[in-house]
Length: 396
Ligand SMILES: Cc1ncc(COP(=O)(O)O)c(C=O)c1O
Image: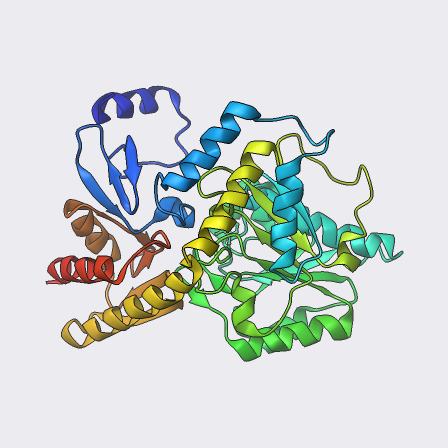
C-alpha cells in the first residue's frame, strides 16, 4: 500500500494521538536502513525510539523469531515457559538483580516497579511509606501512575487528579532531593540519562549520594533503564557507569529488539515482597517475547554490540563536538554510548531534523533546540562519517 493510501486510512480510523507524523511509511528494514514501498532508502538514527538495537531484520534474530512463531506464541504464565525462565536467568546473571518479572512495555514495567516498592514497605508493616520521588523532566510512561511519575506538566495536565504520592525534584539538585524526602518516602525513581527530555546524563557523585541516602533512610532506589538499558549507553546497563546498584531497575525497548516486552528486575529482598496474586499479566513474558529477549542477549554478546555502542558512540560524540568549531550554533554534545543529544544555541532543531529527512536521515528533535540520536547499536564509524557529512550540509 502506498504512503498516501496509508495516511488516508490512518486519518479515517486511527486515534489522533500522534498528530502530524513524519510523512513516510516503511515496508522493510535492513540493518540501519528503512525502505518505503517505493524503494526509497532512509538511514535510521532513531531505531524506533531506541528499540531496534540489532538493526532491522537482523538475520539471526529473524530466524530465531521465525522458529518460535512456528512452534508456540502464547500459553500464559499459568504454565511454565522455557524462554521466560531462560531470559530471567540471562538478566540475573549479568545484572544487579536476583529476580525478574516480565511485562509488555516500559510503562508497564515501571508500574510494576512502583507497585513492588509500595508493597515492599506495606509488607514490612509500613503502609504509610508509599510516596515516590522522581525528577523534573523525567519520562516514565503513559499509564496513570507513570504519568504521575513523569515530571512533565504537558503529559499530566488533562489527567488530573493524578495518582497521588508522587513528587518531583530537579535533576542534579541533591539538596532539593533531601528536602523532599519524608518518613513516607518509599522510593526514589529516575533515569540515569534522561532521554525524552533531551539526553541529560546525571552526574556520578549525585547518583552515589542518592544511593547512600536511600540506604540511610530505608528508601528503595529504582532506576528506569527502559531506554538506557541493553547497551544503549555503552554498558549493558547504565547504572554500571555509576558504580552503584539499584534495588529495582526496569527494562523494555531494546530488550525485545522490536517485539514488545518490559521487565521489572529486583534484588531478592525487594522481590520477596511479591507473593502469588499480588501482581500479574496475561501476555507478559510469553514464549515469543522472551524468545526475542533471549535472542537479543545472544546477539549483543556474539557481535559485541555493547562494546560497539561504547566505541562508535564515543567516536560520534567526538565528531559532533569537533563540528562545533565550524558550526558554533552547536552549543553542547551530550550523552553516553549511542544515546546522544546535540544542543543548539538557537531554536533550529526542527529545521535541522526536516533537512536531514529531505536527505533521507531519520533523527529525533526534542523541543526546539535538541537533536536526539539513538541509532541501532550495529552502527559503524563509517556510518557516523556519512552522517556527519550530511549533517554539515544541513547546518550551512
Ligand atoms: C525512560 C523511559 N521510561 C519509560 C518509557 C515508556 O516506555 P513505553 O513507551 O514502552 O511504555 C520510555 C519511553 O520512551 C522511556 O524512555
